[in-house]
Image (cartoon, rainbow, N blue to C red; front, side, top):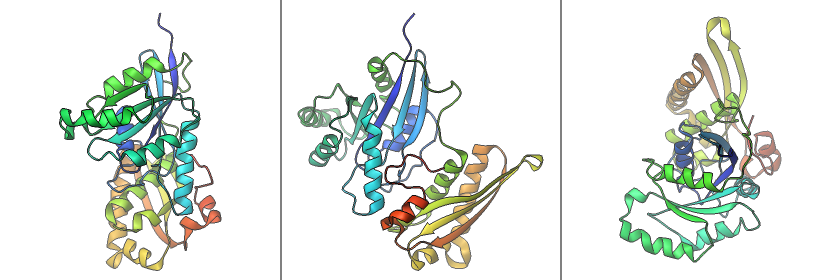
Length: 303
């Protein structure tokens, strides 16, 4: 009988290269929020893939970038910390826009990790095969990757091969999590992220980057098959609050309605969702505010 294998796999890369899309694809469920805007993922998100003979524990991480705000710097530290002790490092780049110098800095930031390094080239379906060869050649000279693999996070092409190659290098170990568990996220964190995702989808420019969500109340009423959730959306300026609320409260209602539907589908019960908007001036630069809103110096999850 083949030995059981398990371990942690950190998905790393610059912002907006498809880390969360690949993460969700590999797990087979929507755990991390998705948006076209960069720096959507702020926390380390854990997802568990159960396969025959193994358990793959994937870590979706914030994009590694030269952050200027205190929040951005903490996000980068979280990403790097997530890679330090992982058994496998998946360095994700885009076939459509490889940036070798920036990716080299990103790869160098994880020097010292004992994780087996893989280069994963995303969006293989959007580039002709002959154009992929020079990209592979460039990156092969950057770092001694164990494997260089092509995937499409959007379609799933190549992901089965990726899982198989990861399983080959994972250590023999018992499972870390029960068979029926696919994430360690709390319901409160999951809900706060869904609200933030809808804010991102409904707003533009600086608003998504200046937004944090905290859950003020999460009460289950099992006799009514109802959950009452009250949440606050924190922004940095009065002008952002006005944009977020919208004329006659129209925008905040759309955000709440979209979030409520997704939360109801997830929880399997009726949900009453109440949203408030609060101005927390310059919270992305204020260490105390960051700590209070769930982003301590090296953070993993908001509870």
